[in-house]
Image (cartoon, rainbow, N blue to C red; front, side):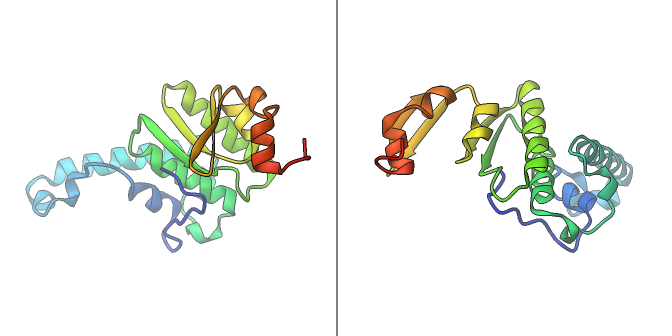
Length: 173
């Protein structure tokens, strides 16, 4: 899951942030570092290579050794997506991936999410930016006041009078 407001470990480098998300690391077990040091070293090397590959894919590799505090809001969202990828997910929940992101970086986020989805990973996206929704989603559910208001395609949602009324107010259509 990614959050609307990403919170990386700001004093850690991007690569260190990525490595915190690696799953099932033998080196986290109490005696593994003494009893199986070679295995731990091999895993750590493999995780570092995967982390760099994800950073490269996300356009952040040049910043891998920089502290996360230098990142813009959109870059932090990309870093968070990279941390999620370190867990080898089958489903990713994105909470407002477009919120507060400049348009150029938003295109990068959309392109990366589409490419990840093309690899067979499912996304559940919570988003108010209908351009982003239209570019990424084939099927949309609209909730209002805790109930499902609409289900259909992105092109149909923007024309639905109930949705327009709920989100823009009466007379805005």
